[in-house]
Structures are given as C-alpha cells and as structure tokens.
Length: 275
Image (tube, rainbow, N blue to C red):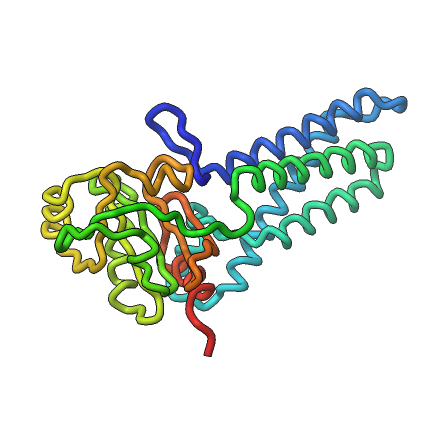
C-alpha cells in the first residue's frame, strides 16, 4: 500500500506514517516529562523529539544524495525535490538518536521521556510500515492487462518477460503523470537492460492513443488496465505510481507521486544486472 485516499485526494503513505510516528513520540515524551517526580519541562521534551526528527530527515536526505551523487550532479536542482522519496533512513535514525543522547547529557531529567518516546515512535513507524507492506519485497501481481497495440490480453508477468522492469501506472488526465512521462519515455529509449511497462489506468484505447500522438511520445509496451486492477492489487489509489521489479519478479522499490530523472537513475541501479 503506497497511498492513503482522502476523498478524491490520494496522499503518499510513507510520509504520513512518519508524521504520525514523530507526533506520537513527541506527545509521549511530553506526557512522561510532566508526570515525572521532578516535574521536568514537558514542552522541551516534546520539542526536542521534533528537532531530532528534523535533523534526522536532513541527514537522511544528504546521505541519499551522497550515495547517488553522480545522478544528482547531472540535475542539481533535483536535490531539492523532496517528492522523489530519496532518503537513507539508517543515517537519519542514527543522527536523531545521537541528538537525543547528546541532549540527555544537559537534561538528565528528560533522559527517560526521550528514550521511551523515541523507542515508541520508531516501533510505531516500523510496525505500521511492515503491516502495510512498505518494508520488504513483494511479488509482482498476476493481473490481466491488454496490449495497446494489437489488443492482445497479457498478464503483467508475461509482459515482464523475465526482465527487470519499471512499471508505471498512469493516466492522461493526471498532471504529475504528464510531467514525468517525457522523462520516462527517454529512459525507455536509452535503457537496454531494463524494461519499461506503461500501464494506463481506466482509459479507453482511443483516449490513450490520442494522448500519445498529441504529445509525440514514442512509448513502447503500453498496456491497458481498464478496471484499474493493478492499483487495487498493490493496495493503492491514485497515480502516478512507479514500481521496480527485478528479473525474478520481486519488488525492490516503489514510489507514489512524480519522479525526477535523478531519482529514477538511482533506483535503476538496483535493477541493472551486474558486470
């Protein structure tokens, strides 16, 4: 599950879960500090947890950029595009906990609230992420689709043909889809070791063909999902969604929302066969 539906709006689920976990951790630290025998300042306890989270997010982003520096040097402005979901969580987690440990030296009365609050927040985030499938690999759904060219029925696994593939769920009415589509089309033309499957959600063949012709997009391997069954199979509403599968059909990454070229290149490294 990658998104949370709120009426007609779909939100990326990972940052929503993170915000809930940080708020819960801050609230718990505040309550524990106020209830302590020494009457430690609860507001300070809660604010410090939030500061630790913000610092952790900054370091997690910088660490991700450092790990994929060549991709982001090619398009430096993409480093500021937080929508691409590029974070290195271990670096952020260690930084946040280290900040709380350092603050505990100055405020020993708040050591227990910070420890309990941070452990509870991390546990909540991890358990919720595991429960909805944000952690760990998932098998490629065996959904039935239709080829745009030829109208031949084909399953997603058949379309993958034993290759590592990028599967993009899109629709012509979707603004973010239209923004990222030229970049994905160029990547399909450029990449030889990775396949790109463009799975349209719920639109007619005529609508899809008209859009591709008007935009001048030379896409190959366009598939129709008239009932939006693939979105349902992965438990997410809304588009665009980009899924990354290895040659064995295991999901190695997923992204809800617009994807920039640098973030795409960093994820393609996980799919390209080794030398």
